[in-house]
Length: 139
Image (cartoon, rainbow, N blue to C red; front, side):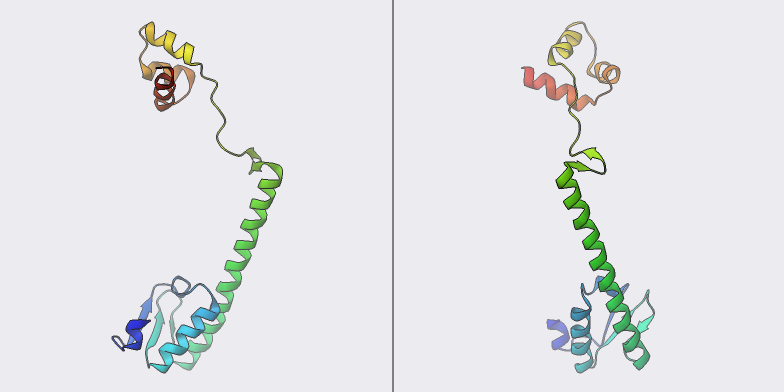
């Protein structure tokens, strides 16, 4: 906006206008600023050119719709987070990864018997990283 005030360009071109502004108010304020400075605003995806009267009207309506969509999405996310917190679950599953029931003693015994970390991990159905982690905690 500082560059706009200094009239360093004659147009702002964006792929989608919702990536330029997060609310219809911000969008309209920027549009008014650009208009006062005689700077055009063009959105490629929406095919909007604010240098025309129709473009200004469409831009305003689409900005309001985009803000409503973001608000609805935020409401849904927050409702889901509240539900997850209240039930201690996330999508019906316990929050966080389940703890693996791999015994450090079993890993140590298998290593002593000559099994590789890869063989132990494969047979127990866990990652090699977990095997190394348990071996390091035993040391």
